[in-house]
Image (cartoon, rainbow, N blue to C red; front, side):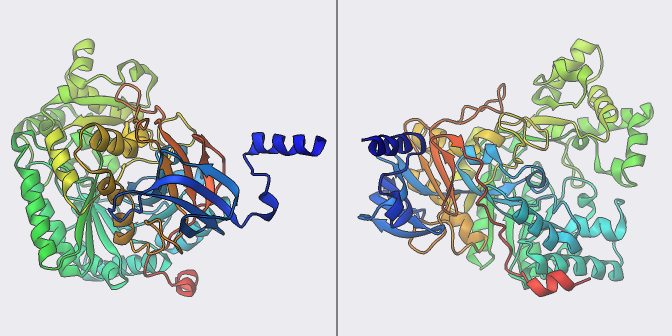
Length: 548
Protein backbone atom coordinates (compact mmCIF):
# COMPACT_ATOMS: atom_id res chain seq x y z
CA UNK A 1 0.00 0.00 0.00
CA UNK A 2 2.83 2.43 0.90
CA UNK A 3 4.60 1.69 -2.40
CA UNK A 4 1.38 2.42 -4.34
CA UNK A 5 0.96 5.74 -2.53
CA UNK A 6 4.56 6.67 -3.35
CA UNK A 7 3.93 5.97 -7.02
CA UNK A 8 0.85 8.18 -6.95
CA UNK A 9 2.96 10.99 -5.46
CA UNK A 10 5.41 10.63 -8.33
CA UNK A 11 2.55 10.81 -10.82
CA UNK A 12 1.14 13.90 -9.14
CA UNK A 13 4.34 15.85 -8.80
CA UNK A 14 6.24 14.87 -11.94
CA UNK A 15 3.42 13.64 -14.24
CA UNK A 16 5.36 10.45 -14.86
CA UNK A 17 3.35 7.30 -15.63
CA UNK A 18 3.64 4.28 -13.35
CA UNK A 19 5.30 2.35 -16.19
CA UNK A 20 8.11 4.88 -16.69
CA UNK A 21 10.79 2.33 -15.90
CA UNK A 22 9.96 0.22 -18.96
CA UNK A 23 8.69 3.00 -21.25
CA UNK A 24 9.41 2.58 -24.93
CA UNK A 25 9.61 6.32 -25.66
CA UNK A 26 10.83 9.44 -23.93
CA UNK A 27 7.66 11.43 -24.66
CA UNK A 28 4.31 10.51 -26.15
CA UNK A 29 1.86 13.26 -27.09
CA UNK A 30 -1.61 11.72 -27.02
CA UNK A 31 -4.79 12.40 -28.98
CA UNK A 32 -3.79 15.74 -30.49
CA UNK A 33 -4.91 17.38 -33.68
CA UNK A 34 -1.66 17.08 -35.60
CA UNK A 35 -0.80 19.78 -38.12
CA UNK A 36 2.19 18.39 -39.98
CA UNK A 37 3.47 21.82 -41.09
CA UNK A 38 3.18 21.09 -44.80
CA UNK A 39 -0.05 23.01 -45.21
CA UNK A 40 -2.25 19.95 -44.74
CA UNK A 41 -5.37 19.90 -42.55
CA UNK A 42 -4.97 18.39 -39.10
CA UNK A 43 -5.34 14.68 -38.43
CA UNK A 44 -5.96 12.92 -35.10
CA UNK A 45 -2.75 11.23 -34.03
CA UNK A 46 -0.30 10.46 -31.27
CA UNK A 47 3.33 11.55 -31.59
CA UNK A 48 6.12 9.49 -30.04
CA UNK A 49 9.59 10.91 -29.39
CA UNK A 50 12.84 9.20 -28.50
CA UNK A 51 16.37 10.62 -28.29
CA UNK A 52 15.16 13.97 -29.56
CA UNK A 53 13.61 12.58 -32.73
CA UNK A 54 10.01 11.96 -33.80
CA UNK A 55 9.86 8.18 -34.17
CA UNK A 56 6.16 7.52 -34.68
CA UNK A 57 3.09 9.50 -35.77
CA UNK A 58 -0.27 7.75 -35.59
CA UNK A 59 -1.62 5.28 -33.06
CA UNK A 60 1.15 4.78 -30.52
CA UNK A 61 0.68 1.63 -28.44
CA UNK A 62 3.83 1.94 -26.35
CA UNK A 63 4.20 4.36 -23.48
CA UNK A 64 6.50 7.31 -22.83
CA UNK A 65 8.46 8.29 -19.77
CA UNK A 66 6.38 11.43 -20.10
CA UNK A 67 2.84 11.37 -21.49
CA UNK A 68 1.19 14.61 -22.61
CA UNK A 69 -2.57 14.67 -23.14
CA UNK A 70 -3.27 16.92 -26.13
CA UNK A 71 -6.96 16.13 -26.45
CA UNK A 72 -8.70 19.03 -28.20
CA UNK A 73 -5.40 20.84 -28.80
CA UNK A 74 -3.26 21.31 -31.87
CA UNK A 75 0.15 19.73 -32.21
CA UNK A 76 2.38 21.67 -34.59
CA UNK A 77 6.04 21.70 -35.56
CA UNK A 78 7.91 24.27 -33.47
CA UNK A 79 7.63 27.79 -34.81
CA UNK A 80 10.59 29.43 -36.55
CA UNK A 81 11.42 33.10 -36.05
CA UNK A 82 12.92 34.20 -39.34
CA UNK A 83 14.08 37.60 -38.12
CA UNK A 84 15.48 37.36 -34.62
CA UNK A 85 17.78 39.75 -32.75
CA UNK A 86 19.10 37.45 -29.98
CA UNK A 87 22.70 36.94 -31.05
CA UNK A 88 24.13 38.81 -28.08
CA UNK A 89 21.30 38.09 -25.62
CA UNK A 90 21.78 34.31 -25.77
CA UNK A 91 25.38 34.74 -24.63
CA UNK A 92 24.05 36.27 -21.41
CA UNK A 93 20.97 34.13 -20.80
CA UNK A 94 20.14 31.16 -23.00
CA UNK A 95 16.55 30.62 -21.86
CA UNK A 96 14.83 32.99 -24.33
CA UNK A 97 11.65 33.03 -22.23
CA UNK A 98 9.63 35.38 -24.44
CA UNK A 99 10.41 33.28 -27.51
CA UNK A 100 9.54 29.98 -25.84
CA UNK A 101 6.31 31.45 -24.46
CA UNK A 102 5.37 32.36 -28.06
CA UNK A 103 5.85 28.75 -29.22
CA UNK A 104 9.10 29.52 -31.01
CA UNK A 105 11.73 26.78 -31.10
CA UNK A 106 14.18 28.13 -33.70
CA UNK A 107 15.68 31.60 -34.12
CA UNK A 108 17.41 32.94 -37.23
CA UNK A 109 19.36 36.04 -36.19
CA UNK A 110 21.89 38.36 -37.69
CA UNK A 111 20.26 41.38 -39.33
CA UNK A 112 23.07 43.34 -37.68
CA UNK A 113 25.47 40.41 -37.94
CA UNK A 114 27.14 38.31 -35.30
CA UNK A 115 28.25 39.70 -31.92
CA UNK A 116 31.81 38.63 -32.74
CA UNK A 117 34.07 39.15 -35.73
CA UNK A 118 34.30 36.58 -38.50
CA UNK A 119 37.30 34.70 -37.15
CA UNK A 120 35.55 34.17 -33.80
CA UNK A 121 32.21 32.82 -35.07
CA UNK A 122 33.08 29.16 -34.60
CA UNK A 123 34.16 29.84 -31.01
CA UNK A 124 30.97 31.87 -30.46
CA UNK A 125 28.85 28.94 -31.58
CA UNK A 126 30.78 26.63 -29.28
CA UNK A 127 30.22 29.07 -26.43
CA UNK A 128 26.46 28.93 -26.94
CA UNK A 129 26.48 25.14 -27.09
CA UNK A 130 28.56 24.87 -23.93
CA UNK A 131 26.51 27.43 -22.03
CA UNK A 132 23.22 25.89 -23.14
CA UNK A 133 20.30 27.48 -24.97
CA UNK A 134 16.60 26.67 -24.84
CA UNK A 135 16.08 27.35 -28.56
CA UNK A 136 17.81 26.36 -31.76
CA UNK A 137 19.82 29.26 -33.16
CA UNK A 138 21.38 30.14 -36.49
CA UNK A 139 22.70 33.47 -37.69
CA UNK A 140 23.83 35.49 -40.65
CA UNK A 141 27.02 37.53 -40.83
CA UNK A 142 26.66 41.19 -41.76
CA UNK A 143 28.27 42.67 -44.83
CA UNK A 144 28.56 45.81 -42.73
CA UNK A 145 30.70 43.99 -40.18
CA UNK A 146 33.12 43.29 -42.99
CA UNK A 147 32.87 46.87 -44.22
CA UNK A 148 33.60 48.41 -40.81
CA UNK A 149 36.48 45.99 -40.19
CA UNK A 150 38.13 47.12 -43.41
CA UNK A 151 36.94 50.74 -43.89
CA UNK A 152 35.71 51.98 -40.53
CA UNK A 153 32.30 53.60 -40.09
CA UNK A 154 32.58 56.38 -42.69
CA UNK A 155 31.00 56.66 -46.13
CA UNK A 156 34.04 55.94 -48.34
CA UNK A 157 33.68 53.35 -51.08
CA UNK A 158 36.03 50.36 -50.84
CA UNK A 159 38.90 50.07 -53.27
CA UNK A 160 39.13 46.80 -55.21
CA UNK A 161 41.73 45.58 -52.70
CA UNK A 162 39.53 46.54 -49.76
CA UNK A 163 36.54 44.81 -51.32
CA UNK A 164 38.62 41.65 -51.58
CA UNK A 165 39.39 41.91 -47.87
CA UNK A 166 35.67 42.24 -47.17
CA UNK A 167 34.97 39.17 -49.28
CA UNK A 168 37.59 37.19 -47.36
CA UNK A 169 35.84 38.03 -44.10
CA UNK A 170 32.48 37.00 -45.55
CA UNK A 171 34.01 33.74 -46.75
CA UNK A 172 35.48 33.10 -43.32
CA UNK A 173 32.05 33.65 -41.77
CA UNK A 174 30.39 31.26 -44.22
CA UNK A 175 33.01 28.61 -43.48
CA UNK A 176 32.29 29.04 -39.78
CA UNK A 177 28.59 28.34 -40.28
CA UNK A 178 26.89 31.65 -41.04
CA UNK A 179 23.59 31.27 -42.90
CA UNK A 180 24.51 34.00 -45.37
CA UNK A 181 25.21 37.74 -45.31
CA UNK A 182 22.96 40.60 -44.33
CA UNK A 183 22.58 44.33 -44.76
CA UNK A 184 20.45 46.94 -43.01
CA UNK A 185 20.61 49.59 -45.68
CA UNK A 186 18.67 52.39 -43.98
CA UNK A 187 21.23 52.61 -41.16
CA UNK A 188 24.67 54.17 -41.54
CA UNK A 189 27.26 52.84 -42.17
CA UNK A 190 25.35 50.00 -43.88
CA UNK A 191 23.58 52.68 -45.95
CA UNK A 192 26.90 53.48 -47.64
CA UNK A 193 27.16 50.09 -49.38
CA UNK A 194 26.88 50.39 -53.15
CA UNK A 195 24.84 47.83 -55.05
CA UNK A 196 27.83 46.58 -57.04
CA UNK A 197 29.86 45.84 -53.90
CA UNK A 198 26.94 43.95 -52.41
CA UNK A 199 26.65 41.83 -55.54
CA UNK A 200 30.27 40.78 -55.04
CA UNK A 201 29.66 39.95 -51.39
CA UNK A 202 26.48 38.04 -52.30
CA UNK A 203 28.61 35.88 -54.61
CA UNK A 204 30.51 34.71 -51.55
CA UNK A 205 27.33 33.75 -49.70
CA UNK A 206 25.80 32.16 -52.76
CA UNK A 207 28.89 30.06 -53.47
CA UNK A 208 28.37 28.41 -50.08
CA UNK A 209 24.63 27.96 -50.54
CA UNK A 210 23.79 30.91 -48.28
CA UNK A 211 21.32 33.78 -48.60
CA UNK A 212 21.60 37.51 -49.04
CA UNK A 213 19.16 38.87 -46.45
CA UNK A 214 18.37 42.56 -46.20
CA UNK A 215 16.57 45.30 -44.40
CA UNK A 216 16.28 46.90 -47.79
CA UNK A 217 17.44 50.40 -48.68
CA UNK A 218 14.02 51.96 -48.30
CA UNK A 219 10.51 51.00 -47.29
CA UNK A 220 8.73 54.25 -48.08
CA UNK A 221 8.65 56.24 -51.34
CA UNK A 222 11.68 54.29 -52.61
CA UNK A 223 10.23 50.90 -51.56
CA UNK A 224 9.83 49.41 -55.03
CA UNK A 225 13.30 50.47 -56.15
CA UNK A 226 14.71 48.94 -52.97
CA UNK A 227 12.92 45.65 -53.67
CA UNK A 228 14.34 45.68 -57.19
CA UNK A 229 17.82 46.30 -55.81
CA UNK A 230 17.58 43.36 -53.39
CA UNK A 231 16.41 41.08 -56.18
CA UNK A 232 19.22 42.30 -58.44
CA UNK A 233 21.86 41.65 -55.77
CA UNK A 234 20.72 38.07 -55.36
CA UNK A 235 20.12 37.43 -59.03
CA UNK A 236 23.50 38.73 -60.20
CA UNK A 237 25.31 37.45 -57.11
CA UNK A 238 23.93 33.94 -57.35
CA UNK A 239 22.40 33.94 -53.87
CA UNK A 240 18.89 33.49 -52.58
CA UNK A 241 17.29 36.68 -51.24
CA UNK A 242 15.39 37.22 -47.99
CA UNK A 243 13.70 40.60 -47.58
CA UNK A 244 13.42 41.34 -43.88
CA UNK A 245 10.12 42.61 -42.41
CA UNK A 246 8.43 43.35 -45.71
CA UNK A 247 6.52 46.60 -45.32
CA UNK A 248 5.15 49.45 -47.41
CA UNK A 249 5.82 52.31 -45.03
CA UNK A 250 4.63 55.36 -46.97
CA UNK A 251 1.11 56.49 -46.23
CA UNK A 252 0.47 58.25 -49.60
CA UNK A 253 1.02 54.89 -51.33
CA UNK A 254 -0.84 52.58 -48.95
CA UNK A 255 -2.82 50.01 -50.89
CA UNK A 256 -0.62 50.32 -53.98
CA UNK A 257 3.06 49.72 -53.27
CA UNK A 258 2.65 46.43 -51.40
CA UNK A 259 0.72 44.92 -54.28
CA UNK A 260 3.38 46.15 -56.71
CA UNK A 261 6.18 44.72 -54.56
CA UNK A 262 4.47 41.34 -54.49
CA UNK A 263 4.24 41.45 -58.28
CA UNK A 264 7.98 42.20 -58.49
CA UNK A 265 8.82 39.27 -56.24
CA UNK A 266 6.42 36.93 -58.05
CA UNK A 267 8.02 37.89 -61.37
CA UNK A 268 11.52 37.29 -60.02
CA UNK A 269 10.51 33.90 -58.64
CA UNK A 270 8.94 33.04 -62.00
CA UNK A 271 12.30 33.55 -63.68
CA UNK A 272 14.11 31.44 -61.09
CA UNK A 273 15.28 33.90 -58.44
CA UNK A 274 15.01 32.37 -54.97
CA UNK A 275 13.54 35.46 -53.30
CA UNK A 276 11.08 35.59 -50.42
CA UNK A 277 10.32 37.74 -47.38
CA UNK A 278 9.26 37.69 -43.76
CA UNK A 279 7.03 40.05 -41.80
CA UNK A 280 5.64 40.86 -38.38
CA UNK A 281 1.90 41.41 -37.80
CA UNK A 282 1.91 45.02 -36.58
CA UNK A 283 1.41 48.44 -38.16
CA UNK A 284 4.29 50.08 -36.30
CA UNK A 285 7.98 49.42 -36.60
CA UNK A 286 10.40 50.01 -33.80
CA UNK A 287 13.93 51.33 -34.16
CA UNK A 288 16.38 53.89 -32.87
CA UNK A 289 15.91 57.66 -32.89
CA UNK A 290 19.03 58.01 -35.02
CA UNK A 291 16.93 57.41 -38.15
CA UNK A 292 15.22 60.77 -37.59
CA UNK A 293 18.32 62.47 -39.00
CA UNK A 294 19.51 62.05 -42.62
CA UNK A 295 22.28 59.59 -43.42
CA UNK A 296 24.74 62.34 -44.36
CA UNK A 297 24.87 63.35 -40.70
CA UNK A 298 26.69 60.06 -39.96
CA UNK A 299 28.95 60.03 -43.03
CA UNK A 300 32.08 60.90 -41.03
CA UNK A 301 31.43 58.59 -38.10
CA UNK A 302 29.40 58.73 -34.92
CA UNK A 303 31.48 61.35 -33.06
CA UNK A 304 31.13 63.82 -35.92
CA UNK A 305 27.42 63.01 -36.10
CA UNK A 306 26.95 63.88 -32.44
CA UNK A 307 28.78 67.14 -33.02
CA UNK A 308 26.47 67.99 -35.92
CA UNK A 309 23.37 67.19 -33.88
CA UNK A 310 24.50 69.70 -31.23
CA UNK A 311 24.78 72.50 -33.81
CA UNK A 312 21.62 74.73 -33.86
CA UNK A 313 22.22 75.79 -37.45
CA UNK A 314 22.48 72.20 -38.63
CA UNK A 315 19.33 71.34 -36.69
CA UNK A 316 17.41 73.98 -38.64
CA UNK A 317 18.61 72.39 -41.86
CA UNK A 318 17.64 68.89 -40.67
CA UNK A 319 14.13 70.03 -39.79
CA UNK A 320 13.68 71.35 -43.31
CA UNK A 321 14.91 68.03 -44.71
CA UNK A 322 12.34 66.16 -42.60
CA UNK A 323 9.58 68.38 -43.99
CA UNK A 324 10.78 67.76 -47.56
CA UNK A 325 9.97 64.04 -47.40
CA UNK A 326 11.87 60.87 -48.28
CA UNK A 327 14.58 60.67 -50.90
CA UNK A 328 16.74 57.91 -52.39
CA UNK A 329 19.58 58.30 -49.88
CA UNK A 330 17.40 58.46 -46.74
CA UNK A 331 14.22 56.84 -45.51
CA UNK A 332 12.62 59.74 -43.68
CA UNK A 333 10.64 57.78 -41.09
CA UNK A 334 9.17 60.84 -39.43
CA UNK A 335 7.65 62.04 -42.68
CA UNK A 336 6.49 58.63 -43.90
CA UNK A 337 4.81 57.98 -40.57
CA UNK A 338 2.73 61.10 -41.06
CA UNK A 339 4.71 63.36 -38.75
CA UNK A 340 5.90 63.41 -35.15
CA UNK A 341 2.38 62.67 -33.89
CA UNK A 342 2.88 59.09 -35.14
CA UNK A 343 6.33 58.63 -33.63
CA UNK A 344 6.12 57.36 -30.05
CA UNK A 345 8.97 57.44 -27.53
CA UNK A 346 9.41 53.82 -26.46
CA UNK A 347 12.57 53.83 -24.36
CA UNK A 348 14.80 56.86 -23.76
CA UNK A 349 17.13 55.14 -21.27
CA UNK A 350 16.85 58.40 -19.32
CA UNK A 351 15.07 58.87 -16.00
CA UNK A 352 14.14 62.46 -16.81
CA UNK A 353 12.21 61.35 -19.89
CA UNK A 354 10.68 58.18 -18.44
CA UNK A 355 7.36 59.96 -17.82
CA UNK A 356 7.10 60.51 -21.57
CA UNK A 357 7.49 56.85 -22.55
CA UNK A 358 4.58 55.66 -24.70
CA UNK A 359 3.72 59.24 -25.69
CA UNK A 360 4.18 60.66 -29.17
CA UNK A 361 6.74 63.37 -29.81
CA UNK A 362 4.13 65.97 -30.66
CA UNK A 363 2.62 65.49 -27.19
CA UNK A 364 6.03 65.50 -25.51
CA UNK A 365 7.10 68.67 -27.33
CA UNK A 366 3.89 70.45 -26.36
CA UNK A 367 4.40 69.51 -22.73
CA UNK A 368 7.98 70.81 -22.80
CA UNK A 369 7.27 73.85 -24.97
CA UNK A 370 9.84 72.74 -27.53
CA UNK A 371 10.14 71.44 -31.09
CA UNK A 372 9.68 67.64 -31.36
CA UNK A 373 12.85 67.22 -33.44
CA UNK A 374 14.90 69.01 -30.79
CA UNK A 375 13.42 66.73 -28.11
CA UNK A 376 14.34 63.62 -30.11
CA UNK A 377 17.90 64.75 -30.77
CA UNK A 378 18.43 65.92 -27.20
CA UNK A 379 17.40 62.48 -26.01
CA UNK A 380 19.86 60.89 -28.44
CA UNK A 381 22.71 63.07 -27.21
CA UNK A 382 21.93 62.61 -23.53
CA UNK A 383 21.47 58.85 -23.79
CA UNK A 384 24.59 58.10 -25.86
CA UNK A 385 26.10 55.48 -25.97
CA UNK A 386 22.73 53.90 -25.21
CA UNK A 387 20.36 53.76 -28.17
CA UNK A 388 16.96 55.38 -27.51
CA UNK A 389 14.03 53.73 -29.28
CA UNK A 390 10.79 54.90 -30.81
CA UNK A 391 7.76 53.27 -32.39
CA UNK A 392 6.95 54.50 -35.90
CA UNK A 393 3.32 53.96 -36.91
CA UNK A 394 3.85 53.83 -40.64
CA UNK A 395 2.04 50.80 -42.14
CA UNK A 396 -1.58 50.10 -42.98
CA UNK A 397 -3.42 47.06 -41.68
CA UNK A 398 -4.59 46.20 -45.21
CA UNK A 399 -1.02 46.13 -46.49
CA UNK A 400 0.05 43.88 -43.60
CA UNK A 401 -2.71 41.45 -44.56
CA UNK A 402 -1.84 41.60 -48.24
CA UNK A 403 1.77 40.70 -47.53
CA UNK A 404 0.75 37.99 -45.11
CA UNK A 405 -1.28 36.21 -47.78
CA UNK A 406 1.62 35.94 -50.23
CA UNK A 407 2.58 32.24 -50.30
CA UNK A 408 6.29 32.96 -49.87
CA UNK A 409 6.12 35.13 -46.73
CA UNK A 410 7.18 33.73 -43.37
CA UNK A 411 7.07 35.26 -39.90
CA UNK A 412 9.83 37.11 -38.07
CA UNK A 413 9.53 39.07 -34.83
CA UNK A 414 12.47 41.49 -35.34
CA UNK A 415 12.91 41.15 -31.57
CA UNK A 416 15.55 39.80 -29.23
CA UNK A 417 15.06 37.31 -26.46
CA UNK A 418 14.46 38.75 -23.01
CA UNK A 419 16.97 38.10 -20.27
CA UNK A 420 14.12 37.53 -17.84
CA UNK A 421 10.44 36.82 -18.40
CA UNK A 422 8.47 40.03 -18.28
CA UNK A 423 11.42 42.26 -19.14
CA UNK A 424 11.81 44.20 -22.37
CA UNK A 425 13.73 42.25 -24.98
CA UNK A 426 17.49 42.49 -24.60
CA UNK A 427 17.67 45.36 -27.10
CA UNK A 428 15.58 47.46 -24.73
CA UNK A 429 12.81 47.99 -27.30
CA UNK A 430 9.29 47.72 -25.80
CA UNK A 431 7.35 46.55 -28.86
CA UNK A 432 4.60 43.91 -28.49
CA UNK A 433 6.21 41.88 -31.27
CA UNK A 434 8.78 40.59 -28.78
CA UNK A 435 6.06 38.77 -26.81
CA UNK A 436 3.14 38.53 -29.22
CA UNK A 437 4.16 37.98 -32.86
CA UNK A 438 3.45 34.28 -33.29
CA UNK A 439 0.35 33.88 -31.14
CA UNK A 440 -1.04 37.00 -32.82
CA UNK A 441 -0.81 35.30 -36.22
CA UNK A 442 -2.92 32.40 -34.95
CA UNK A 443 -5.32 34.27 -32.66
CA UNK A 444 -6.01 37.36 -34.72
CA UNK A 445 -5.30 36.55 -38.35
CA UNK A 446 -6.43 32.91 -38.36
CA UNK A 447 -9.11 32.43 -35.70
CA UNK A 448 -10.65 35.88 -35.41
CA UNK A 449 -10.23 37.39 -38.88
CA UNK A 450 -9.77 34.41 -41.21
CA UNK A 451 -7.01 36.10 -43.19
CA UNK A 452 -5.10 32.80 -43.27
CA UNK A 453 -6.20 29.22 -42.82
CA UNK A 454 -4.75 27.52 -39.78
CA UNK A 455 -2.85 25.02 -41.90
CA UNK A 456 -1.27 27.75 -44.05
CA UNK A 457 -0.34 29.90 -41.07
CA UNK A 458 1.44 26.93 -39.51
CA UNK A 459 3.21 26.25 -42.83
CA UNK A 460 4.48 29.85 -42.86
CA UNK A 461 5.88 29.37 -39.36
CA UNK A 462 7.38 25.89 -39.82
CA UNK A 463 8.09 23.97 -43.02
CA UNK A 464 8.43 27.01 -45.29
CA UNK A 465 11.09 28.82 -43.23
CA UNK A 466 12.82 25.50 -42.57
CA UNK A 467 13.03 24.89 -46.31
CA UNK A 468 14.27 28.45 -46.89
CA UNK A 469 17.09 28.00 -44.39
CA UNK A 470 18.03 24.47 -45.47
CA UNK A 471 16.89 22.92 -42.18
CA UNK A 472 15.96 19.59 -43.72
CA UNK A 473 15.52 17.83 -40.38
CA UNK A 474 13.05 20.36 -38.95
CA UNK A 475 9.80 22.10 -39.78
CA UNK A 476 7.52 19.07 -40.12
CA UNK A 477 5.95 16.54 -37.80
CA UNK A 478 7.36 13.56 -39.57
CA UNK A 479 9.07 10.41 -38.46
CA UNK A 480 12.85 10.81 -38.43
CA UNK A 481 12.86 14.59 -37.95
CA UNK A 482 13.94 16.51 -34.86
CA UNK A 483 11.19 16.84 -32.27
CA UNK A 484 10.63 20.59 -32.23
CA UNK A 485 6.93 20.78 -31.29
CA UNK A 486 4.44 23.41 -30.12
CA UNK A 487 1.09 22.44 -28.57
CA UNK A 488 -1.61 25.10 -28.39
CA UNK A 489 -5.30 25.60 -27.72
CA UNK A 490 -6.91 27.38 -30.67
CA UNK A 491 -9.81 28.64 -28.56
CA UNK A 492 -7.58 30.11 -25.86
CA UNK A 493 -4.50 31.32 -27.72
CA UNK A 494 -4.13 35.08 -27.43
CA UNK A 495 -1.38 37.63 -27.87
CA UNK A 496 -1.99 39.72 -24.80
CA UNK A 497 0.98 42.00 -25.48
CA UNK A 498 -0.14 45.48 -26.52
CA UNK A 499 1.33 48.93 -27.10
CA UNK A 500 0.49 49.80 -23.51
CA UNK A 501 1.67 46.47 -22.09
CA UNK A 502 4.24 45.11 -24.57
CA UNK A 503 5.68 42.39 -22.32
CA UNK A 504 2.47 40.56 -21.43
CA UNK A 505 2.76 36.78 -21.72
CA UNK A 506 0.60 35.11 -24.36
CA UNK A 507 -2.14 32.64 -23.47
CA UNK A 508 -3.04 29.24 -24.86
CA UNK A 509 0.42 27.87 -25.66
CA UNK A 510 0.80 24.95 -23.30
CA UNK A 511 3.84 22.91 -24.30
CA UNK A 512 6.99 23.55 -26.30
CA UNK A 513 9.52 20.83 -27.05
CA UNK A 514 12.94 21.55 -28.52
CA UNK A 515 14.88 18.53 -29.82
CA UNK A 516 12.56 16.40 -27.70
CA UNK A 517 13.24 18.29 -24.48
CA UNK A 518 10.24 19.84 -22.75
CA UNK A 519 11.01 23.56 -22.38
CA UNK A 520 7.49 24.85 -21.79
CA UNK A 521 5.45 22.59 -19.52
CA UNK A 522 1.81 23.50 -18.93
CA UNK A 523 2.73 27.10 -19.75
CA UNK A 524 5.81 27.29 -17.52
CA UNK A 525 9.44 27.43 -18.63
CA UNK A 526 11.29 24.42 -17.27
CA UNK A 527 14.78 25.90 -17.52
CA UNK A 528 15.80 23.14 -19.93
CA UNK A 529 18.40 24.02 -22.58
CA UNK A 530 18.13 21.37 -25.32
CA UNK A 531 18.61 23.89 -28.16
CA UNK A 532 21.27 23.47 -30.81
CA UNK A 533 23.36 25.84 -32.90
CA UNK A 534 22.33 25.53 -36.54
CA UNK A 535 25.32 26.06 -38.80
CA UNK A 536 24.83 27.19 -42.36
CA UNK A 537 25.39 25.22 -45.57
CA UNK A 538 28.99 26.40 -46.03
CA UNK A 539 30.19 25.13 -42.65
CA UNK A 540 33.70 23.70 -42.77
CA UNK A 541 34.70 22.59 -39.32
CA UNK A 542 38.45 22.25 -39.81
CA UNK A 543 38.69 25.40 -41.93
CA UNK A 544 36.60 27.42 -39.51
CA UNK A 545 38.89 26.54 -36.63
CA UNK A 546 42.22 26.99 -38.40
CA UNK A 547 41.62 29.81 -40.87
CA UNK A 548 43.25 33.15 -40.05
